[in-house]
Each structure stands twice: as structure tokens, then as C-alpha cells.
Image (cartoon, rainbow, N blue to C red; front, side, top):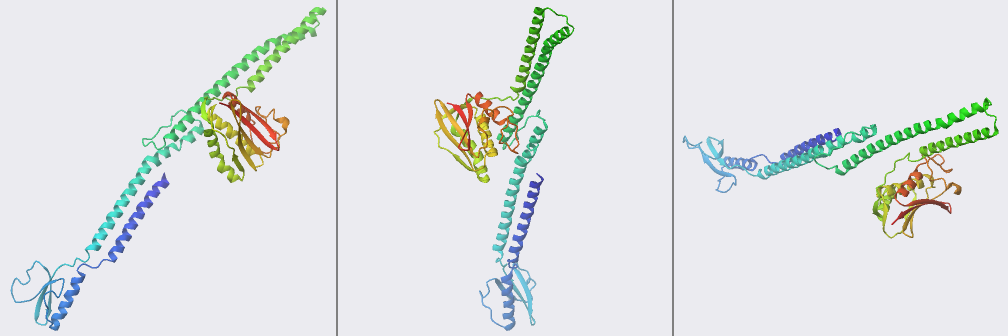
Length: 409
């Protein structure tokens, strides 16, 4: 905002300099007032001194030339005049004002009014922009910082001008999504903690029984074969019970650690593809990667449009990260009531026996190299596709990685 204030000051300064320059230029070219009349007066004086007879109409600006006759009202006239002496005689030359400078005066006035009007309009526009755009946006610029700090309570307010309606709406929607995400995470953590405490308590019962049986066996309290067999079976049952609890713990640790909501609706396939194409065409061009989108017949698919784009972008990012950078393409095919969208990238170095695991959580293939990642991208993609009623699968052919999304129609 300070920079914009400096811009306003600079514009005002330039307008002042422009006005000053225009005035100097016009004043420099303006003839002094009465210039032509002065020339004629001097010429008339010379003619009188030389005794030349002056005829009416000889001078355009001289009204009359009068010789002093001793009368008291000689110098009383409404005209502009000049008195001069020629020898012993005194003359009065009446002349009319020279209006030759009027065009210059009008030009000067016109230029000044034009510059002033332009300056006022420009200044008004700049002040309006500052008050209705720069200042409101300066207030909004703190919102991402506050969101990053975790301050999610205050809603994002729209300014009266409403120039940032979509931005404010999107930012506030992001804030609400972050609040819901935090609530889900807290609820999941609370449920998981409750489950862990419950399972831990449940494990104590069979564990205590096993310890009790082991002490009894250690002390030789049971010597009957049937009783011993019964105790051995009980120990095995308790061990199986503990193993069951451990399986539950393992499942609790693996499932639903990510809350992925899907708002299922219908969308044209072309809309999803165009969003992806717009996002990656320029980027891949700068990377020197050939990018092609195959021909397809448009149709309506069942999906969450935003989630479908998220999945497709995830696959594109993987293609950029793990491919050789030569080629990435989108191809399309049909299978019964489904539309298949395949993302292909060249330079696949993944082993085919790893294809069964790439959609598992936290799994990272042997081709990751030094690339950073969490091993969740394809896992999330698979979860989202299943929630949208579709599927996802991968195959390797001719050194190319092909990951196919299955959308139902």
C-alpha cells in the first residue's frame, strides 16, 4: 500500500511539472500585449518628425493623432493614448488595444483547464483504486498468514466494493474446510485413543490368565494329564485372543487415518480434462516434456469434480516426478458403462512385481530415488476413486507407466 501511495505522489508531481512546462512553453511564444500597436505608434512618431502627411487608415491600431492646441481637456479621452514631443509641438496619439495575444491567452487557459481536469480525473481514479481495492486487499493479505498460524476463528469479511468476492469466498471456504479437518482429526485422535485404551484394557484379562497359568505350571500345581491339556488349550486360546486384539490395533492404525470426503455428483468429462490441461500444458512445455491429450467423446461421469481433478493432478505429478521427462499423455477408452482415463509417462523403472503394492499406504517403490514423498499419493487416489464409485489400476508396457482411472457413467 505504501508503494501505491508513492505512485499517487509521483503522478501528482508529474502533473504539476506538466502544467508548469506547458505554461512556460505557451508564455514564451506569446507576444507582449500591445506589440503591434507599439510598432505603429513608433512609425507614426517617425512620420511626424519627418513631416510626412498622415492619412486616415494608415495605421490599423491608431485611432487618431492630435496636436496640442492649449485646451484644458486635451488629455481627457476614453481611449488609450501616448503623448510625445516633436520639436516645440506636443502630440497625443490615441490607439486601440492590440488583441493579437488573445489566441495565446485562450490556448493557455484551455491547456491549463485540460491539464487540471486530467489531473483531477487521474487522481480520483487512483484514490478510488486505493480506497476500494488496495486497502481492502491489504487487509485480506493477512488472512493466509493467520490461517497458516492456525487462527481459524475469525471469518473472512468482504469489503463493500466486492471486488474480491470469489477470492474472499474461496478463502473463507478454505478456512471452514480447515476447521472441519481439524475437528475430524481431533475426533479421530480421540476415537483412536479410546480404542487403544479399550483394547489395552481388554488385553490385560487374557494376559493375566496366561501369567497365572504359567506360574501354576512352574510350581507343578497340576499333574493330571487331562488338567494339563485343558490349561495348555486355555493358554493357546488366550494367546489367540491377544492376537485378535493386536489385529484390531493394526487395523485401527492403518484405516481411516485420512478423512476424505466426497460430494458425489455429475460432471462432463471435458470439464475435468480441460482443468488438468490448462494447469499442466504450460508447465510441461517449460520443462521440455511432450504432452498430448488424446481425442475423446464427451460424456457425463459420476464423480466429485474437485476430487476427480485432485486424483488426475496427483497422477500427473507422479508422472513428472518419476518419469524421464520425455513424454506424458492422456488417453481415453470405454468399457461397458465406464469411461477410462489413462495417464502415461515414459521412462518407467518400477519393477512389475511392485504394481500390487503401489496403492498401499506409505509404500514407496524402488524407483523413487532421491525424490521426496510420503507414499500416500496413490493410496489417496485409490480411496477417492472407490468413494466416487470408480476404480484405479496400473500396468507397465514398453517401458511406460500407465495408470488408469475408471469413472462410471
